[in-house]
Length: 129
Image (cartoon, rainbow, N blue to C red):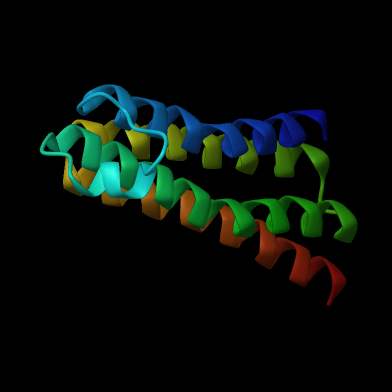
């Protein structure tokens, strides 16, 4: 289970990577008004990185719930770890594709990550049924 837990940590930190790119891609960052600062940015990369950050936070709860539910339900640790790695890889690709403005690949990466999180939840539900 250590691998799945490390994946949770990585997934928790990824949004901060994307927001740091957003802050570096715009005008000089103003910490007194971060949301207003982001709204005033003209650099599309800054907006895309910020969107990747927000999406990372949105996807995180389902993934964590899935890992913990699968573990508590007794799903094989190797299966949980494999699906967790798929989720993290998809989330990394999602952010990269967001920054590169590759919308179709970004959506595909999102779908793979979403399916991975849901599959953990479904496996847990099936195991306890």
